[in-house]
Length: 258
Image 1 (cartoon, rainbow, N blue to C red):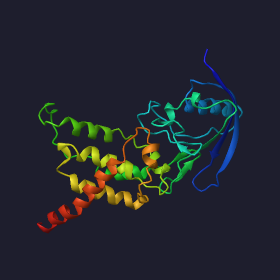
Image 2: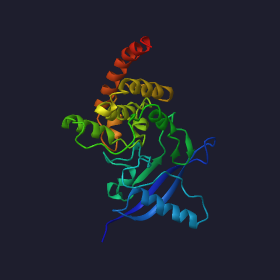
Image 3: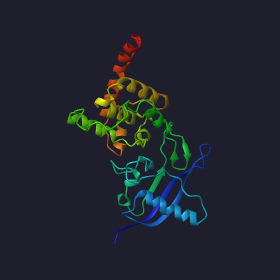
Image 4: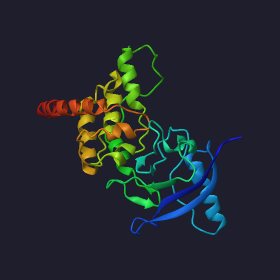
């Protein structure tokens, strides 16, 4: 029989809309399985609220397998909660103890305005990807897997960066509200591969400058790496900065020849 966590107190942020004044609301959970996920805890609480004729707590969720990046909660002041390398949907109640008070908030960043309760608008991350998070490739049949040889260290580094699920935890955890880890991961996983070389410097310039329209500057606190559910290294920020610096020379030369 699964162990039960009892007498939990949840202090949850409630806000009816972007222009409303938010507040914390306390809810009590008498018992929950230690094997339940944190999102299942919110599901159970919402079922109770609906049964009582009250508004359910709005929160983002989709795959619940740590892949989609939709879940986005500050739990006791930590993005995705106290367990490192874990998305909220993968956080289980065994991490907590009976009688604990748990504070649940939405991401806190100027670039992520609150839509309702625990849901924020993470559209600025999409706009960074729109300006350069792609490669120009000819259409047609899939090329042979061995057509373009890629050294194993390069392939592994690119795949490590590509693990970014775009949840925004790095922004929420950063004291400056910076998105450098997210942008660095998106730039790096394409810029390392042969297929991404044609637009490498145009991509770096476009994505970094779009990022700067919405987010703060990186000052190497390292909170982003600690909060990232995929444990992406801040090395990607250094790689992005190097390519951005080179882009200011290479793109200028390209323009001078036109």
